[in-house]
Amino acid sequence: MTDFDDWRARSPFYDESHEALAQSVRRFVAREIAPYIDQWEADGELPRDLHRKAADAGILGLRYPEAYGGHSEGFDIFHGMTQTEELAAVGAGGLTASLMTHGIGLPPVLALGSDALKDMVAPPVLAGEKIIALGITEPSGGSDVAGLKTRAERVGDHYVVNGSKMFITSGMRADWLTCAVRTGGAGAGGISLLLIDIDTPGVTRTRLDKMGWRCSDTAAIYLQDVRVPADRLIGPENGGFIGIMRNFNSERLGMAMGCCAFARVCLKEAVQWAQTRETFGKTLVKHQSIRIKLADMARRIAATQAWVDQCAWGLENGRDQPADFAMLKVQATQMLEIVAREAAQILGGASYITGSKVERIYREVRVNAIGGGSEEIMLDLAGRQLFGGK
Amino acid sequence: MKILVPVKRVIDYNVKPRVKADGSGVDLANVKMSMNPFDEIAVEEALRIKEAGNAEEVIAVSVGPAKAAETLRTALAMGADRAILIETDETVEPLAVAKLLAKVAAEENPGLILLGKQAIDDDSNQTGQMLAALLGWGQATFANTVTVEAGSITVARDVDGGLQTVKLNTPAIVTTDLRLNEPRYASLPNIMKAKKKPLDTKTPGDYGVDITPRLTTLKVAEPPVRSAGIKVADVDALVEKLKVLGVGA
Ligand SMILES: Cc1cc2nc3c(=O)[nH]c(=O)nc-3n(C[C@H](O)[C@H](O)[C@H](O)COP(=O)(O)OP(=O)(O)OC[C@H]3O[C@@H](n4cnc5c(N)ncnc54)[C@H](O)[C@@H]3O)c2cc1C
Image (cartoon, rainbow over all chains, first blue to last red):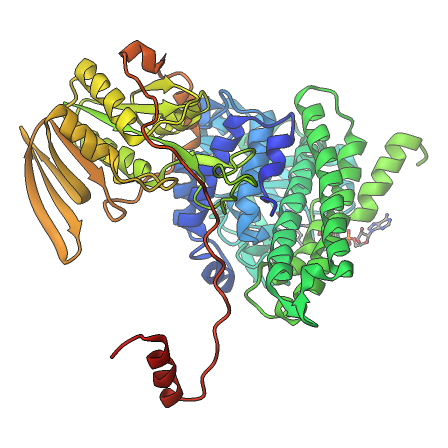
C-alpha cells in the first residue's frame, strides 16, 4: 500500500524540515479542525477563535515578515506548499480559503502600503485577531478587473466610495477590506487600492449561500457614501492595478497546489474504498478497469504536482514567467475535475451522500476553476503573453 | 531540577507495518518514522513541569541511528532545551538503552527521568524499570498524573482496578501512560528555532557500554489473518456453537 504523503520524500524540493512542519500542521488539523469541520460547514463560517489558535501554531504567519509577527526565517516556498497540503487533508476547501484569506488581502498592504498602514494592519491580522479580505470582483463582473466600476472620489482628506463588491471570501466576518476602486479614468490606469474599515458607516453586507466552500463566509458588500481617510490609500493613486496583479502569481500557485492536495484526498478515499468494497465476488481494486482508473488519477496528480513544484521553485528563484501560473492553474483545476469525478465514480452511491470528503471536494471543483481567474481568462492571458495578439 | 527525557524513533503509529519477506524483522525501508507517542507524552509532561517553575532544564536523549536526530529536533521544537544523540546503527535492547541512560544520568544528575511506558515498535515496557534498578532510584510506572513538590514527586498510576498513588523521593524514574496529557504540537517558528538548539552526538563507546544484544530473534511473522465469522440464526444456536467450541459453562 502506498502512503499518500510519501511523494514529498522523493522530491528534491522537500526535506525533513518540511516533514516536521507537515507533522505539526497535521496534528493541529487533527485536534483543532477535523472534529469540528462538519459543524462549521453547516454554520457557514469559521469561528474567530480558530484564527487565533492557527496564529499561535504559526500557521497564519508562515512566510510573513518577522517584524509583523510572521515567521520567515528558515522557511522557503515549499514550507508554504506543505502547509497547504496539510490544511487540505480535511477535504474542505472553504477552510483554507477562509482561514487564509489574508493570503490575498494582506500582500498588497505589505507590498505597497505606507509604514503606518502596515504597522496598523499586519500584526493583528497575523495574530488572528483581525480578518482582512480582498475586494476586487463586482456584481457586474470579475474577469475584467480593469473595468471595475466602484468609484472613490477625493473630497478633502477623505475618499467617498460608492459601489459594491461581490463573492468576497470571509466578507461577512472581515474587519478590513483591501478594496479595488476607480479613482481615475477608464481602464487599468484609473484603479487604486483602499483599505476600508468594515465598521465605517455606509458599508452593508449580505451572506451568499454556495455550492461548496460552505465553511467560508462569502459576502456581497455594498458601499454607499463610505468615507475613507485618504491615508488608507494602499500605494499610489491610480497605481492599484499593479498591486492586484502582483498578487496573482502566488495566489494561482497556491490554488494549483491546493488542487493537487485535494486530488490526493480524493485518490486516497477512492483507493481505500476500492480495497475494501466487494462487487462480483472480489474487491473493486481487483477489477482491471478500476485499477486503471486509480493509476490514471495518480498519473494526473503526479504530473501536475511536478509542474507546481517547478513553478514554485521558479517563483522563489526569480526564474518564473507569469503565463506559467495562469496555465498551471488551469492544468490543476482540470486535473482536479477529472480526479474528483473518477473518485466519485469509484465510491458509487456513497459519493453522493453527504459525509464523504469526495462529495464535498466534488462540489468545490467549480470554485477552483472560476475563482481567482477563470479558465478561459487564464488561457487567454497566457496565450496573449506567450504568442501575442490583442 | 533537570529533567531527562529519553525519546525513541519508531515506525509511525499510522503506518501499517510489513514484515520483511525473509521473516527477519519489520521492513523499515522508506517507512515513515516518528517519535514514540508515549515519549511525546513524557516530553509534554517535562515541559509542563518546567513551565510550572518546578524544573530548570529539559534534556532529550535518544539512542539510535543518525536519523534519530530528527526525533530529537521534534522534542526541541516542542520546547526541550537541548538534546543528546547516542548514535548507533546496531539493534539496541532495553537493557543496553538503560545502561546508556544510567551513564547519561550520572553525568547530568537529573532530578527526574521521564520515559514512555513502552515503545510502540517492540512494546517491551522494560527500559524505565531496568534504569530504576541500575540507578537504585524509586520508580512509578504508568503515570496518570504527576505532581512535583520540593524533594518529592507524587504519581497517580493507572492500574487495573483504578488509580494507585505513590510518592517518590527525587531523583526518581517515572514512565508515562496514555492519559497523562495531550502533547502539544510544535509551533512552526519553534520548528525552525529547534535547529539552533544544542544537540550533542555521542556513541555507546563514549560511555563504555557494551550494547551487544542478549537476545536472538528467530522469526518475525504477520499476525494470523482473522477468518470470516459466521452468522447464527438465534440465541439457541449461538449457545450451541459456544458449547461445541468449549467456551462458557
Ligand atoms: C466562492 C467564491 C469566492 C470568491 N472570493 C473572492 C474574493 O475574495 N475576492 C474577489 O475579489 N473575488 C472573489 N471571487 C470572485 C472570482 O474571482 C470571480 O468569480 C471570477 O474572477 C470570475 O468573475 P465572474 O464570476 O464575475 O465571471 P465573469 O467575469 O462574468 O465571467 C463569466 C464567464 O465568462 C467567461 N469569460 C469572461 N470574459 C471572457 C472572455 N473575454 N473570453 C472568454 N470567456 C470569458 C469567464 O471565464 C467565466 O467563465 C470569488 C468567487 C467565488 C465563487
